[in-house]
Length: 188
Image 1 (cartoon, rainbow, N blue to C red):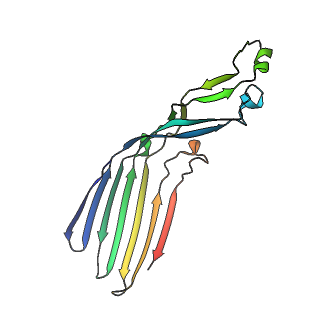
Image 2 (image 1 turned 120 degrees about the horizontal axis):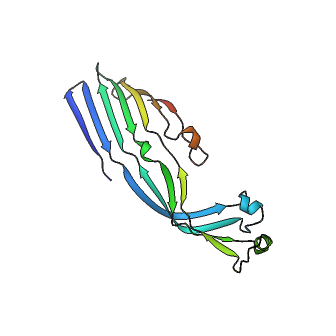
Image 3 (image 1 turned 135 degrees about the horizontal axis):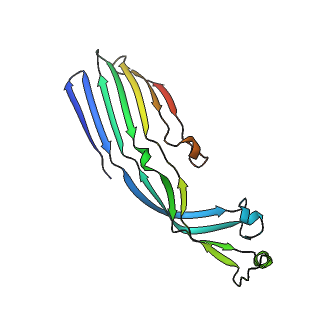
């Protein structure tokens, strides 16, 4: 990918910056293990496989465009105040998609025979894509910061931030925890 930015300093006491990062399309390969221990087909006895693995799957994901802007002012010698705004276009992520899935599952042939099915091979392959709805929302962040030089060897700093959440409440899970963010910092 790439990014581009511009920093303008029209006078000594003012700096204005803008930076842009485009969205990026990823296709990442990896492995996957499905835990079927609480799946209806396992708990009912139809499946004998409690887990199944696939060492060659693909996750398809688009990362958002990001626009950052900021203004810094230096009203007196040794003091700098800054405010930044960041937009992240997370609404591009409508779903998380896992492709190239091939999970081999062992079937309970006796159970199927009881239902009237004559199955010679006790295995089947689940090769459907896994689609996890995301419907992410764009995020907005505001950041404030201040630095004051007490002398040539010591400066004090403080800052704070607020950022909205990308993941809607209806798709929030332990797999991806995201919420409104507040933060602050102090330092010297």
